[in-house]
Amino acid sequence: MATRDEILDIHTMCACSHTRMAARAVTRFYDDALRPAGLKGTQFVLLAAIEADEAGSITDLADRIEIERTTLVRNLQLLRKDGLVLPEKGVNGRRKPTLTEKGREALDAALPLWRTAQSEIERRLGYGSWQVTRRRLGELRKAVG
Image (cartoon, rainbow, N blue to C red; front, side, top):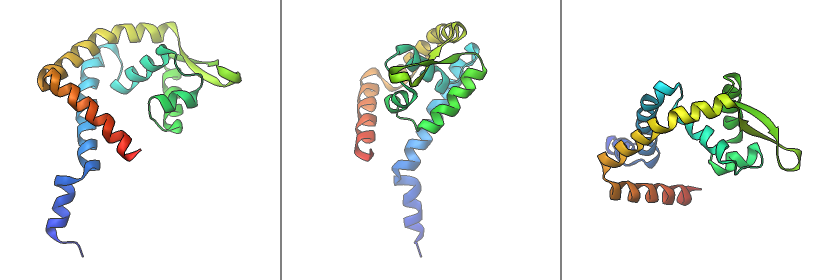
């Protein structure tokens, strides 16, 4: 049976626990910031990734933003229901999402709100600390990927 100290180590040392807590806090921060544009942080990031038009298919997009394909498909269905994205034929006839005019307008409305939120994160952490954090998060993804 696990000791109390071993159980407490889960709360104090677990990378999964700490990264999930941080992710939830950051998500709430961006959701609050983007609320006036009618978007959540996850929707904004997805719209931006689609608009960057670097993915030839849904699978390519899932790989690019490191999300499970099935989760991406569910998110795209919600964006499609809201009239923000439409499927289009991509590479080799595979479907890829594209922004509708309404989707571009939502992205444009959210962009200054995102910039303000991003600047606030950088101010609170310090720009140098944010750069180190961003790099270290990338290293963590590679270490476990």
